[in-house]
Length: 291
Image (cartoon, rainbow, N blue to C red):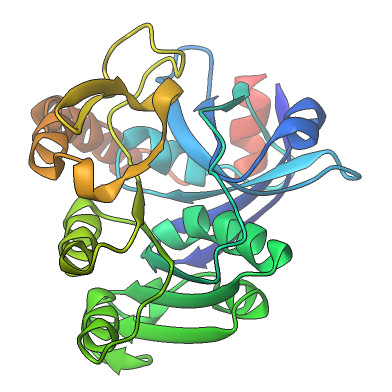
């Protein structure tokens, strides 16, 4: 079992966990992830390591409650525990002194983009961060990202924070004006990463996307995380998760991510129906029952 040192909501359905996992904290590098299992019979889900504290022996994970398992995880509180945390997995992101780096985080993708921004800031690159969300309540890690950025741009779909529009809009405007960063890193929903890739493609600017496919074991055995990059099949869990965005087949990635859509929908509906029918119980009672 892995103890939850701290659990706090950052936004509606988005929760930050600090989990005690000293061996993972000591080895993790930017871009890597863990496979988490809430309980012994639960499914395995991949979560990017947002940060770690070697002295404290903790890793920080940011979880958006979308499906059954992520919603179950977000019900846990400080002092409880998760059954498994396996990692660090995946290839670390490559960080070099290149000049100006644009880090783009859409929604909960900010948690994945954050360690990349930190690494580029520490190596001496100029970091321009673009954060976005549907509304101001869904823009997360603003203060943390601002602390490691030379410039911060915030966008929201409804204009409730920063400028109204999508994260790709300010990037497009600057590129059209002649601005040329040395590297662009995009993390977030597939449509957003694809839009960023198409915006930078005409200018030949190196662009990296952190992919988020279906993943089970995180070791390349299940094959669920297959993606097409440059016309070749890759296994995101061991070959990535970061790839040249101009080479990624985002259409195929989106299609594969819908493979179990109906099963996931039915599982979530059963879970929510069960929760709605149960009388309220405090978190301590639930924890004692599980033990």
